[in-house]
Image (cartoon, rainbow, N blue to C red; front, side, top):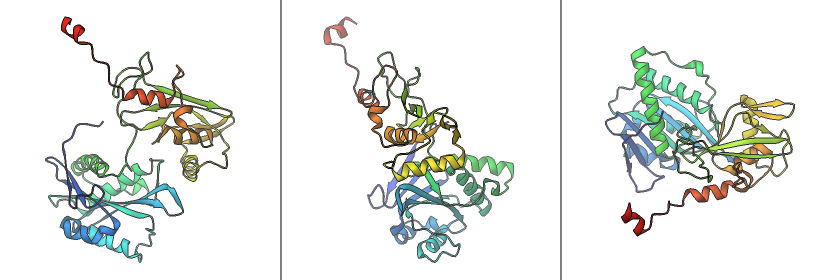
Length: 320
């Protein structure tokens, strides 16, 4: 469960996407972010990169700009390992043509060992593989987690929880999942984020498909399990959405059935149009296609969220 945290962020060059670091108050974790082209400058700015740690490389598929790609690794000296990756002559036989952004996590107290880093790496790989919005280049299996004493495992699990928050703050949503309170709909079809009322459930259906979409407090949305996606796609469907459908078929999140493709588990999307396209198998304006039971479109509902409640007039305020 998410919980409040105080986080300190420092922009070394004043650029929110440049050399930067993040720390949780009173924690021993340091998260560092920078562009691939800034590796040399990062080694100078952050000597901590020479320590043992875990790193995440992200970017886009060069042949499919709609597809985000990531690789997760660990090393006893992260800076040196990144240098190998950057040379294009990687001794590990990895292809890093997608790499554009870097996220490194180390311990400020230098107590992170090789065994700790391997455990963290395996846990992160396992969780990242469950995110359908990303393509992961790692081939390791979740069973390849290094063994740790129970006390160390408990500490590393907390380390991982904090790590995911920090890299998220630095701009990496690889571990972002559908969490937080569901956006609710009142009798008028609108209420504020984080309400505990009944969830706002949008519907969209057509020939061969029928689904439900809910929005979480973070602003992301989920196509609900039990929805039925059309089993054929139109030529106009974007490569990114097509790849997403293919990946979910391979993972079992989409199950072929007589009436179509049943969605076996909630699938997260960044926009209603992407969710609508994945469901219908064709390009669609999701802001008008998805509707509440009242008939209110997603676009109208979304616009209503930003309208502040009207304040009582002065006479009513005085009487109250």
